[in-house]
Length: 395
Image (cartoon, rainbow, N blue to C red; front, side):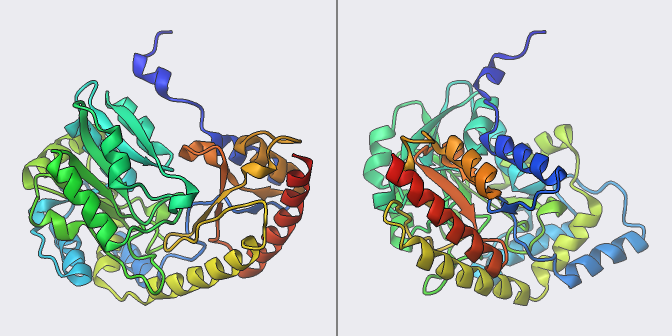
């Protein structure tokens, strides 16, 4: 069987390798603590679930307009007014099957074969593959732990070629939790606009930012440059709605029409019931978001108080999301030699699942999620610290 040349760039997922092993252990009755999960350990808010139940009871189970029902598009626009004081017209919005489809469709609409996409690294695992699948070439711009895993304008400039067309900007970051300050963000946005790049801002964690920092959005730049910027967000992380599959994009109406054409041919509208749930989330109370944010902040602080005692590791303090990206390369050289081997070793020895950093473009690191209970997190980190110290001594 012959496959497309693009498939040659798509590599097996390191995260799925670890997850498969974790599931195997669980099937054998082993109690596995997962610090690899990328979703909040909170229930979807009750008022959101109630809206979905009502939609089902009322028979709201048919096809809808491809970009979303009008009230949902109005609510998406209203979110940016509510959160950031920016007026957005509903025809500048489109709902999608999660933020992932928003991103994929943007690459599909904007890229020609050979176009380059600048992607700050460490990066979310799917960015490069999405670019490859749409004929583009991902260009990783690496930021080390010493910079808090945040790229600079100078590094972006050094990576720029005449083929560059898009800059992906993710803050707060998955996998690092890094948040760019407003001044850092604005410098990068201005640079990208001056260089003629289109900016795709992935803001899926925008509400999960911890004091003294405040949520921020590139939407403040989009208002002036609607044809040069697309803002992607969704309800998965901030509203604990990962399984509902609701994402959305704000961009120029002409691009929204193209995205709608792609969606119409690929999937059609997103789930009608999920749209009603999303409407309730975007227009309802935000107490649930605040409660999650406070819990995550507490867990982050507790985790860092433990990790900061690890002399063999470096972990820049994240200001958002719910991840810790830890440089543990000093543990390599004895029993383990890279992040994938380390994640396997921790799973086999301690029954703790972590995510290897190689999946995010940095093989020196592992990613931990603190979207677990306080007690489980403390126990796991204490056990990990002891084993990692042994590995560092052997390296």
